[in-house]
Length: 149
Length: 244
Image (cartoon, rainbow over the protein chains, first blue to last red):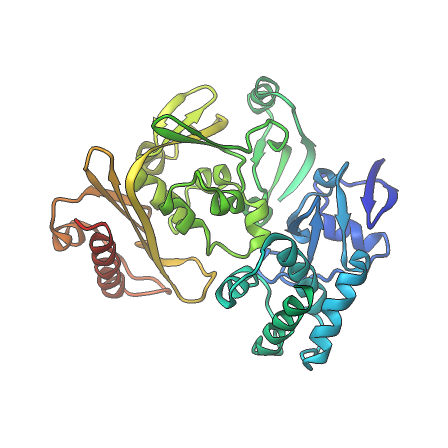
């Protein structure tokens, strides 16, 4: 049995050899993290492990033992703020990319001080949205960063 | 990739013992490309607890541990410019937080921006058993195979840059080119994703000579003609930037 600390809660679970964190998270009932491409190309499965943004589809669950894992369910007030900003801009269509986007924006706000437009675009290059042209997400992020100042 | 077991040793000696145990063993760096392989092995050898995730500046060179993430390299002040430029458009930030430079180098992928940059930088690879070898030797032979890459040693240089053409921001490169001017004034050019693996030339003052001395081929990404034209353009830009 392995202990995983997810969103401040301890989970005791058996891990199959080579099982990936996304499979474990969803198996434990945390369905907010989505599976997209399974190749780290789309950003849908983003979680934060010890403060670092990682694609959970390809991150070994055993490597997360002893670390703090944050999923979309555990993003608290900042996660809510980001989601509201995205919704305010009318971005959401299918909504499938949103959890991964929220996680990436959370990591961005912690890592970058006062990013330029290009730095924001660069940071979010790993997040795909099948529905939009990303303009709404960028407006939402600019509004968020303004509010966080 | 499927594993009957994954072992995560805490010492290089223990890791090498597992590697040479006689079982089918796959070394796991970031584990990203390996994940995509449709095969199974007895043992996955997880290198994440060997203390190889570092970037250290020493007199005359930079030492980069094989398990240093591409994101660490992208953001470290110690990283040579060519290497920072090479890694920054490899997939997204999340992927670069997990992918390792050791995995990138040992995969020896022909499209690798990292290998092209390191080749022009004159990097050496330090293996546990085989010792230190020039990266050119590894690119050409993919050898040593049954060994553990510990670190990459990059000599200081007065200028370095890596540029590429990609169809989309995070795509594999259609063509990549790197130029390094060493502290001795020698300018080293590497051209990769030709689509074949990177080759190197010493720059003697003539861009056309380098391009004519390089073989380019066509594939689904681009024609040989396009690769040749873009390689010339990218190299000319860097030569100008380096004031050669």
